[in-house]
Image (cartoon, rainbow, N blue to C red):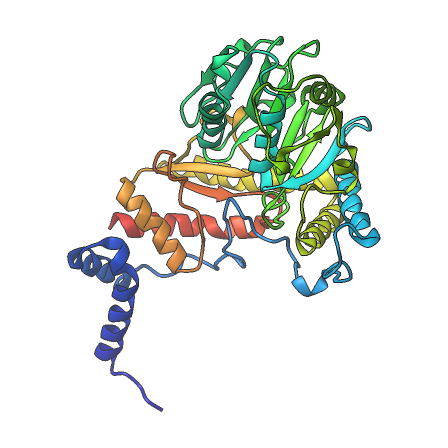
Length: 418
């Protein structure tokens, strides 16, 4: 059996490591420094997470997931066949049941993930009233940019921006009940959510609320009576596949669609929600606008079944809260790490964003080190956010894995600080 002498083994390992990190570091001096650190790394602080996937989207598959368990009878069949429509309708009905969506609300599967669903709502409905756009992170900021730069709403109506920096919320009480209100329920890239209950939204409003809830649905209680348009995607809290969005409409949103047609605003086919001035009701019964992936549909149905097995919507929320609780305890015991969201009442229990007492370059090292150790994958903060890390705590992430991760955060911090 071929064996390296100790010095040869160390040299071979060092070369292999340098080949991995050199492109990201950018200089041989830095590579040598990282190699030296790796060679003298402290012992492992404990067991690694059984699953190192903490990505904020697409998110980890649910525990016990196995693609071979997915039914295949709908694959290779038309989505407009009796079977195809039945499976799509079943996904819609189960969603409505599990989320406790009111009977008179409509749920539809639409193209292009949460982005497609939210853009569809904006392009069909905005312009009838003045608009308040609330944003405090990158995605909400994107909706504001679309409203003024692409929809060009300021040419015909008043658009008011309510904004705050990463880690904070704007004063939502300054919104006007007689305007349409656009907002994200949970800021995925800042870890800041709106307060429970959305009491800042008036019950007697005349405007519509358009809520991007992609990283909130199935993790936070949704006050449906406050929400007229709600959108999300499958690949977040349930760990489903991308490319499909969910559009949830209140009766007031349907009334807007049937009473308002924006002037000089052509809509591509995949955005059209009405036909001859009436809602295209088929969309909300499984007759999708374009061809969906039936494999992704079966994957979503499988995720819904798993969710039911852990207690349904309440069970999912409990898991996310437990996961956040683990990190909150760790942060309270370590001065070098803190939450981007200082106010606990608006702190996300899914996209948990933390700052570290490290430079931006050291944070990149920190993230790369945990990735290399296969302890935590994809936890770097969003590119537009302040230097930080982001740990997904949605319900498909097991609490035991979050607990196992915590000592490794301290280990990586100490390694980078050497």
